[in-house]
Image (cartoon, rainbow, N blue to C red; front, side, top):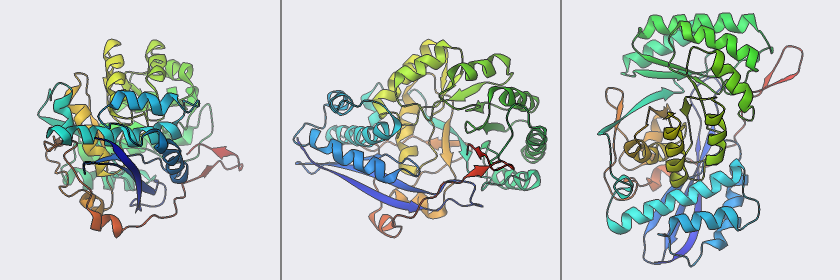
Length: 387
């Protein structure tokens, strides 16, 4: 079997809400072979569509004529034989291809990917919902949205506050966070898991103060309290926080996760299979985390394709914690021919060959690419704040 071409497909998706959440083009990768098998992957990187597509086009010549089942070999070729090895642009491009290769391998032997790497160690996959606030920042509205999600059967919720803030100590932000959490707990009760995504917006001092508020409301974890390049600052927050710290969506290689665990910076690693060079690298990251007593909660606010792919990782690793799932527009669930069916806070494990999913071509054609403009935040003095 030989690779004949690599195809990219962009599908536009407006994220429901008030504009404080990211719209995106889902970027799918299909690897074609001379035996008619086609593998499916995802390489979505919000707001960087052209860069990732261009990187995939640059890498394609390295793949043509190669056996797609030599996944580790080809991954090493893609990473190491164009001199520039690192970065999330390349990590996403390689991931899209690598994921498609696993799909081909599974289809070639008529087995789901999770059976190729030891088999499932759990029967269903616990998940949390992201995007349920629609980008709301007013505590009362957040509480109303939480009540709505809880009424629809959601039992684990992550939210963020897309607000510009002052560094060191922003008392107004702390009050808003406290009121938002109070409204959420009033709506969903004490037993629903609640997580907060800092989105890397804060400095260590501000994050430590926020962690104290999160601990008061028994939040499950505090994600990306500071920018991901600041490992020591993350460790400083972790030492002072009474809530577990999570990070990893913007890390592309296993060595970066080693740095975090060695520093005692995180309890929960969040590799994104569409960013961190794919499924094989994620398995290695999970093993590293396990060696440090850490847990894996894969990042995945993308399409149902990436969610379904991530379920295979979740199924096999011993230190799986919880899977992210994005509340997309209703039509997005039909992007795959057999939509995922959540029930009681869990997702079923796909059992078809490869990833066990296929794109619905008609739905893809009905949603052409859109212009993606990420939200931008500025402080009252006009200075730039991290979104």
